[in-house]
Length: 221
Ligand SMILES: [Zn+2]
Image (cartoon, rainbow, N blue to C red; front, side, top):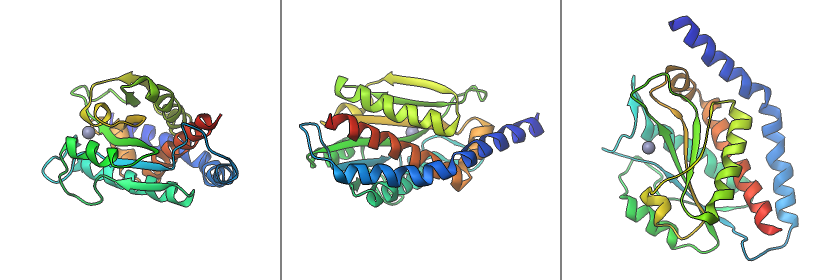
């Protein structure tokens, strides 16, 4: 059982290595397209990135892997990717601190022309459950969720748990197009093992960045 889990983790790793070159050069081309365009009523230039949990709020945890750390690392990678493409980014936390949910939404609402992305990883008492899902609440956020989820599934090769609605505080109280990404299950051995690999965390961040770019492009039409 243990060996077969490792094989699964290895195949997941090789999946993102295959797409690595495409991910490296894709954003650069998209960034050029981005800089060349005009603006529209829906155009945004700021991405508020919300790394879930922090400090005593650990989030999901298993075998010394803590969701709060994975969330922050993926968020920092997403921040770097977006800045390199010319976007302004805002982090609701940039270290291991506790920020209440209402404060996170309030931070987001300080900015105009922004979208909001909350980064989380999942947990289930059924440790076989795996995959990636993206949540939204308002109708203006549905397309955004669809595009980010599409890029995650395309690039990561995880189980597609789909796009769902929920009343999570951070996506309910933000005025912008807002999504919450659950980038895999800490409770699943294969996905937990993948999360400890920085290449996997980079692939998740790059996929979310690609989804944001796709939404930005759609909003301009
Ligand atoms: Zn969480």
